[in-house]
Picture 1 (spheres, rainbow, N blue to C red):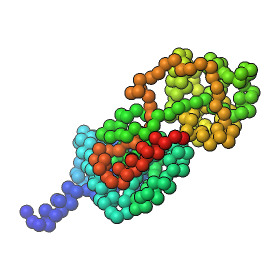
Picture 2 (picture 1 turned 90 degrees about the horizontal axis):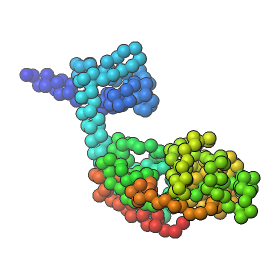
Picture 3 (picture 1 turned 120 degrees about the vertical axis):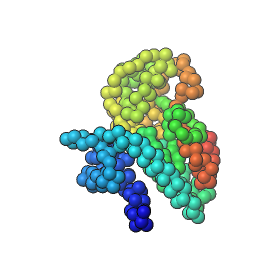
Picture 4 (picture 1 turned 45 degrees about the horizontal axis):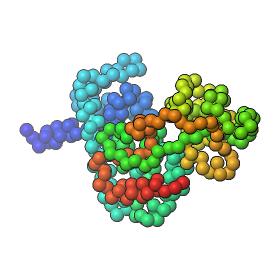
Length: 316
């Protein structure tokens, strides 16, 4: 076999990363159009890269019928292997990039937690560790840390993120809040308190990502609640503005509305009685720092984790 033939065969066996990425994304999403949107390319560009990959390999990876695509048997097997290879490539690339004097820390944050709690405190950390460069993305939903090239994520929920370690940060104290004007118009009891049952009759503002917050809060008082949301919001920030604008009562983590409570833009609605039901700790959502197991010895992450835990243990 000639040397030129060996080189040509080797090239065929190592497709370009752009073709593999297009194939991996289309296979994962089941659509060239969705893959194009995620990759910030045109649908035609993604389709051409996948076709070029099929030509290079000499096999068909997708069945195409009308405007739908499905993986062939070979394509399905190849997709699993390619996804694992790309994930490993991202990991080793991230490792190489971060082994520099200017150390990177890529962090995924929850939008409202980031803007209302983390960012106002962050100058302290950056003063202590000026060689660390931080990059942020905001994420509400679960995602693959390795695929996103993220060292860690601040997550609200249970410590059940697959293939990751977690560091407990803090729990939440949720309180019902509304504007002073809404309170004046809707709370009629002489002692300015409200029964938990009466609260159910008021317009309650719901957060889309936490659909069971109100039902869990009422359950802690021993009351069932299953009413569909009258008004629902994507982020805490928007829901806070809605409560300030007299639209209803919002159930908010108290630390996220400290500024509004101190300014009088919102007030905490006092309710009769005390919670009668306490959830087991393993059932209580909380804030966690989540990071892949292979990143736990990365020095900037260790430094950030130690600082963050100390911050969370300070009084509000």
